[in-house]
Image 1 (spheres, rainbow, N blue to C red):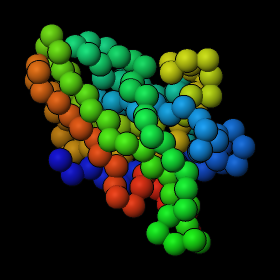
Image 2 (image 1 turned 120 degrees about the vertical axis):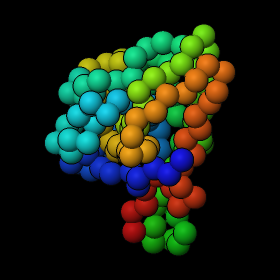
Image 3 (image 1 turned 180 degrees about the vertical axis):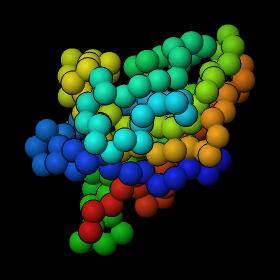
Image 4 (image 1 turned 45 degrees about the vertical axis):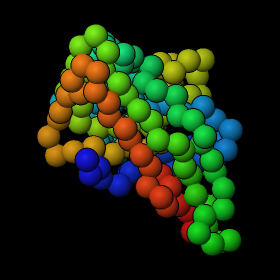
Length: 151
């Protein structure tokens, strides 16, 4: 499945300068429906997002914690790259329905669902929302050049 490139939330860029530590923060990836406002670049906190994928069948509103998160030298010494391992969502006990987009949220609050958690980037995963049928998986693999690169 071909996803769009990750796009920054307007405030996401500002949070990098002190609120979010790209090399040490916990980040969660959440899935959203087509009726969500995930692509509103002026959103800045988790509580502002609407219509997350329903918590059921092995998907939770806490999203999925990203692993192997790195903030390191990119393709050249003049670049810094933000990256993580691929994430896999498996539908168990039924389908995970109405998936359209993914949002990466920095866990700046006490939990993955803290309303004050900061939004970093979002991507539309496909042109039309879809479902993962029972016992099937959705794997979101980050670009080989990283989620984003600063040069």
